[in-house]
Image (tube, rainbow, N blue to C red; front, side, top):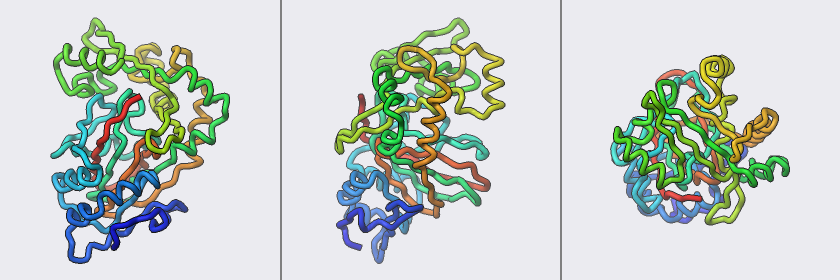
Length: 321
């Protein structure tokens, strides 16, 4: 295997050039990565995502070393969390720990925040018996597919994310990784989060961020937000009905609005979801597959599954609006 890769060298998965088969020969995986790190990073920038198949990675420590080698810097800790995960060694985390029956919608990692990772690595230690794919979608195509009037309204107003941390969603102690309210307040001030402590000890935060971003390397416009995912309508119908009958709208665990606080129209949310659906594709995980992603150029999600599934995640290169 040469250490010079071009997009043309990638094999197709579901009609997209994505797969690079690794021939280790007498090398171990870490050595192969070290020799090809720069070329791989360039390939991620060109293609948006690359699936490496043929590596042999035995544990979280080795995986962390491999990601740091490819991405050229230390891995980021998962702060201001949105989903439950378990931290392993070297800022490696389990994939989101939702029930195997649940679908995780397409999203760019931490697009709800004003700082996010530019690079993601997802490593399959054990594929599910059935299902459990990690679908991908090109954020540039989503932007291009949406009607101009919808894009313009979001560009002008942005997206407001409101979170109430409590028993249903993650508690604030887990989200901010501290029990110290002063530390939480400092984080909120440093990251443009409005916050309010409630009488019962719970916390409410809100933040307005752009809905569209420009990629810092390619200059391309991408649809980069989690308006559809944060909105209560993204939940299963029974869950929606239960929450809306139990809580006032402003007390929902999480919800999204236009940046001025006005409601997102159901028909607009449906058009956004359809755009994601039309450009999403998936592949079946194989053991030791490593998916390297430019987090602004590609979204990811998760399909329901059965059987044991273990996917590890690392992220780095923090970027901000």
